[in-house]
Structure formats: C-alpha cells, structure tokens
Amino acid sequence: MCPFTIVAHRGVTTNAPENTLPAFERAIELGADAVELDVRLTSDQVPIVYHYYYLDNNTSGSGAIFNHTLAELRSLKVVSKKNPLAQAGCISTLAEILEILGGRIDMEIEIKGPEPEAPGIVGSVLLDFKQLWDTIEVTARVPAFLLAIQKICPGLQADLLYPLSASWMKPDVVQFEALNLARLARASSVHLHPSQLSSEIVDNLRRANIEVHAWDVNDSSSLQLCKDTGVRRICTDDLAQALDFRAQLDR
Image (tube, rainbow, N blue to C red; front, side, top):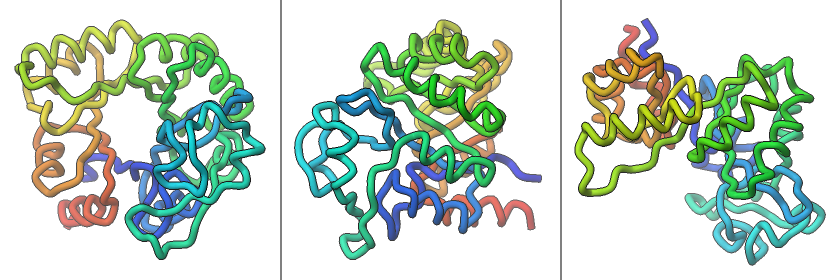
C-alpha cells in the first residue's frame, strides 16, 4: 500500500535549475506524483514561477524581481546552484507551466506574495485552467491569501504552510497554532516540518478535519517518521530517495 504521495520540491534540481520546465520534466520522468512551484509577481503584475526575491541568487540578472517586467525577465538565464555545468533554463509564467504540465502531473502552487493583489492575480490565471483544479493544491503562509483564493476559485484546494517552530515552542503550541491558523485560512490541510510531527499532533489535527502534509522531507529518518505518523503527502528535495523508500515499502 502506498503510504504517501511524493511532491518534487521545485522539480528535480540535480541537473536542472529549480522552478524551471526542465526540472519539472525530470520529475515527471522519474515518477513524482506532483511538483511544487513558487509564484511571484513581476513589476507589471504577471505571475511567474520563481522562488527568491533577488535575481542575483541563480540567474544572469540582478536586483529584486518585483522591480522587473516580464519582458526584462525573458532575457535572463536561470542557472543551477547545485550543478553549475547543467544547462541553463528560463523563467516561465504560471500560465505557461499550467499549459505544459497540466494533465501530466499534479501541482502544488505556493503564492509567495506579499502583495495583497497576488491571490487575485494568481486566481484569475487559475480560472482559465478550471479543468485542472482537481490536480492543483494552492499553498501560502498567509491565511488571507488562502481565503482570497477560495473566494475566487471555490472548490480549489487551499493549504496552509506552517513555518519552522521558534526554539521556545513546544509541541502543544505548535499544534495549537497550526490548528487555528488552518481554521483561520479555512485550509483543508496544514504543511508541517518533520521536526513538528508526532502521531498525537497528526491525529488531533485530523480530528479537527485538517489533514497533515510534510515539507522538507529530505532524509531517511524523516521519511520513516512520515510513514509512522500516517502523513499522506510529502514534499522533498530528494525525489529519488523518497521514491526508493516508498518502493521498498511496497515489496
């Protein structure tokens, strides 16, 4: 029995730049159940697939992405930090990724924000792909973003990303915050880090009709913990390891 579905975080980035079409295509080739991608707005309010605020991190450009138009971003090359010899990619719009990947793999779309307009703009794009909604999960750290998406796209799954715990936080506070922030966002699921997982927390959140997914599941102990606690969806930077772990369980 398959213990959980596996999401390739920003695609497979071993030999391709993260959040680019080649990284997503590689995830499809290897057998991921879904890909995670990040969405930010350009200065002319186009939702594009890119994680960072600054272009200096892994492109041929520089400066903050919110100060660049889509036309300016089109000329940039995106490079792989993990493998400098990998072929460069480019920044795609959300609509382009939906058009190319839609129907081939599920997608987990994180709205980075923080612009108040971001959910409305992303939602307007998603309205053109209503036939894909049962394969899409929209995530955000900001409850207001998820409420806005659900208003624009009723029926689309919206899930809360819960950040790493502060050092002073014990499991009772983690559970309390995760539960109530998810309720505030009317989220169907909350995404927790492996360091926040326990059978008690997962069970208690489920009793409140909130499912639990996990992010940053990047080692064998985290994979085992997700299996043991019954987490049904994980997001990983090491797709091959996660697929192998799941395959071993099916033997």
